[in-house]
Length: 455
Image (cartoon, rainbow, N blue to C red):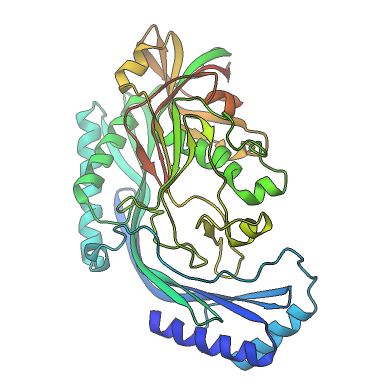
């Protein structure tokens, strides 16, 4: 597929220049995808697809146009003529610096696993069967009358990306991905509780998947009988996966130079200033082996690099793509990524890696709590607001803690506050284990003075 897309890119670019484009850029991706679905503990089916898609962006002077396609036999002459016509009639972007050039690779990491590439439907079915049986055994071993995987699935991908420009440069990179999501339900004494497993990696590690399954199944039994608690101020201990969800939603977008330049980030004009607790470091790290965000170049062909974004709580840099960097007469940080093949790049993390300089074990964090909640699961966190740092979510899976002792399960309460206060003056402690969820790697966080709306 790489060679097919590279040939398409060269033919598109030649024709676009012939039709009057000043410059052009081609971004392609290809993937062989196998998806298995589970319902009521049984595999419903496994689908297999193999496809490529690509986007073409052009400039006529400082006027831009783009298109996204999956047709591998397009009418290039007609499309090129249409694109150039659209660009000539588009408004001029006075900040357009030209498309990125000087393609090269930055940090190298392991992103392609032959085991995933070779995993066929029979192997996928066997892996899922093992997962389902392991979940049931673990739940019953934790005291459930019955534990089943009510729904979920597993997705396996091998593919890559290709970026080409009209200056004769091109780069490609291959990768693999395995992700699974499971809804695990446990019943005990006439009541039931559900817990959700989310897992992703660029390599196949069955032992790790089964360890995550066992943990999720045990947790599905722990929240049977959960109920709301009284409203008030509480200490809140966020499980690493919950920390990651808040970081991805509320904090990560604020580091984008695009949001900073548009006045949509609380971090505007905060370079070299204390923005978080001095115990917190945040890195943009594309070098982590098998991490879902690892890559050697971004979607503009610019090399990626490992860098501190926040050090000792002090803001070190924003994240730039080529466009936002040139607006400030700077160089891209290698963080230009596209939401779709036809969209322009915008700044974002490769892997967001958050770590404490002084850390505590999980049990020590619980021991610090006088009146608090351990939060294992939330919904509605996506309604939080990165523009002002406002944070809120409904707790679906929580444990009440008094004087360092877990009292019982809770659910249906809303926690709220501000992410810069949570990770600033109100931060009590940071866990010693950094856990990945997607491309965010985060520890547990213990925060004081959190608003809790209960009964």
